[in-house]
Amino acid sequence: MTTRPVDETPDQRDELASEYVLGTLSAEQRAEVQQRLHDDAELRTAVDTWERRLLDLTDFAEPKTPSPRLWPRIERSVNALGRPSTTPTLAPSSWWNRLPLWRGLAGAGLAATLLLGALLLTQATVKPTYLVVLVAPQDKAPGWVIQASNPREIQLIPLGVAQIPEDKALEFWTKADGWQGPVSLGLVKPGQTLSVPLDKLPPLQPDQLFELTLENRTGSPIGKPTGPIQFIGRAVKVI
Image (cartoon, rainbow, N blue to C red):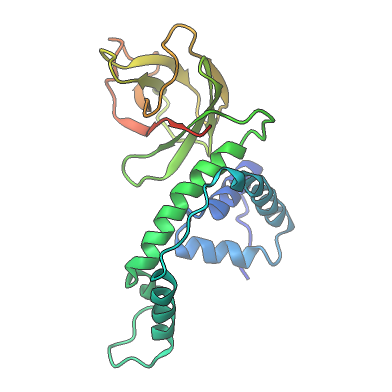
């Protein structure tokens, strides 16, 4: 049995549940969560809540017909797992790395799930017209979601609490095609959800760039990003 960490906070538990449902945990972390779900009622509740949020968003996913060759390939791969092997036995989790097909499917599914999951974070009655998932450039881990139900205001929603040095701050930027350079949308506190007006900027457009950079506590002194990019993504029109 895997027990809950003694110092785990409700926010950390909710973040863990969201990552479990979105599929961004490692195989080891996912197994630990599955063990905890047997005895941890609060974690089960958090996971159930995230699953309910995601369920309604399947309406946004455009149906795709799989190739006629897809299922036979999956079946052959699964059957191969049950046959004795003459090669040295691999670690239990290594078989995953030997199946590019599964990894490809998982990657495509994860991208779609992140977009769908982002829509539900606020459980808003007004469906957003634009959506952005901001990911860390190093490991592509999702950190923030941006949604907009109108072209003049966006909501920035954290998926967790980013850790930054005490003498630094996160600055929010955007840039669209044809602009001379990025425009600052202000400083952002880690873990804080906020609405950002775009009334002084052109309307949102598909593929518009958004990013969070690490700057001095008071922000960039030159009106342009000076620090490393912490999270980055581009706008997708969903309606």
